[in-house]
Image 1 (cartoon, rainbow, N blue to C red):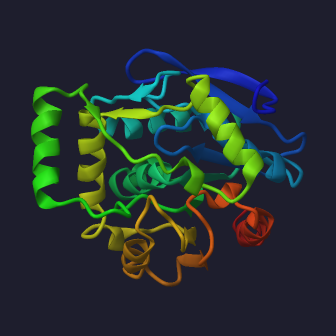
Image 2 (image 1 turned 120 degrees about the horizontal axis):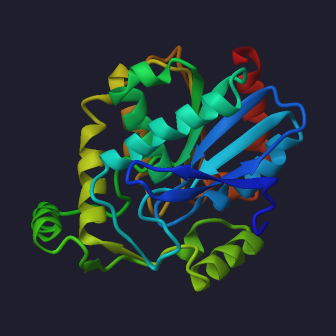
Length: 283
């Protein structure tokens, strides 16, 4: 297994296609993390936190998302497909691990997906004990002009698969050189994408637009880690949005020097210890 998984199963997704389910299984699990990876990444990216939490009785599961199918370019029909597939992931987990408390762990775009799931499908979140989010991709770090947003919508409709130019910030994801090197290898092997389609870019912009006026409806315990030196997600906007959540539900940690990938940063064990302490009273 390339990412130290104990097993890899297959999830039949809403488009009828089977996609890998990466599983890091604790021998005597007391909880389960359903992890949602970021844009252009893959489920194996969660190997670092998964291997840590496995030692403490937590099984981690991460599915490869729609559009992230060992291709150079990410393309999706719409953001809703992520939520539909998350429903299927939850059904699969309930059958395979019926007695384990479930936590959803999302990073970057995965955190954006998790937020939509919490707000739009509360009836499907009944078994979820809480959410763990890292660097939520609620707003681009580089401001998107109104003209560019309009153009993205037009291109998404007319030429949905057209390549959209994006800045390469791969050197600003983590301070850990070993993990940065792994990302480069994954991109070389087409496990990690390097391009996005016009439809994908536009759907993310629309999904981000939903957050400010709806996040106040958040209803589950939330542990959130925000990176202060984030070149991808706007950390200031994230903090402003999080202020709208009931303070009794939110546990917030801000690391001013962290790059985007908190779970792969050099101070990750401190973050992981805080997560362990947070989940203990919830399971």
